[in-house]
Image 1 (tube, rainbow, N blue to C red):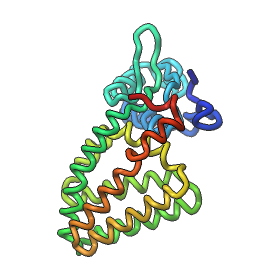
Image 2: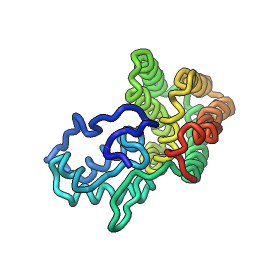
Image 3: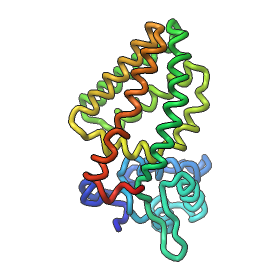
Length: 242
């Protein structure tokens, strides 16, 4: 078991909390939750890593209470395992939870792009084009953190255009396992380029007011990672569970 460092499967070790800043003027538990969740989902803190509350609290200069609150919320999402008298560690990626998250996302986002395609003249379409430009620029400079952030922003913005922006936060809390699988899948040669091309196809269909095409491209886009789950399990056997 590693301690806030990559295993050999994930790459070289490093200080996962480097640069983390906690704003004492704001509630601390949500900030700890957001930071820990980002580290876990990005695999910067990989499956099996120890997340001692005392160590996290010390590293962030906080009391134990907000750290424990954050870890309990992460446990609800299946991202950490809290074992009494044993400790807290990052959970293995749950394939069943990933499949459920995929089902949720497809169900919601098929309706989202159908609605969005019914209003192609909205000014938000230009904002979607700008998001894809930023995502492409991030890929060119090798900034995967920004690449993924713009990926999320693209889908969140589609929800906003469809008038259901509040659903994105709900989808996010259910998608931790699926997002971790996607982080394993992104290094596959050609995957990042295909993500951008799929986004462009979705946007083109929305802009043209073609809901059937938008739904077709969205379904293909969201299904790519789960289609490779067996391959990912073979490549990362210590990361992925049932």
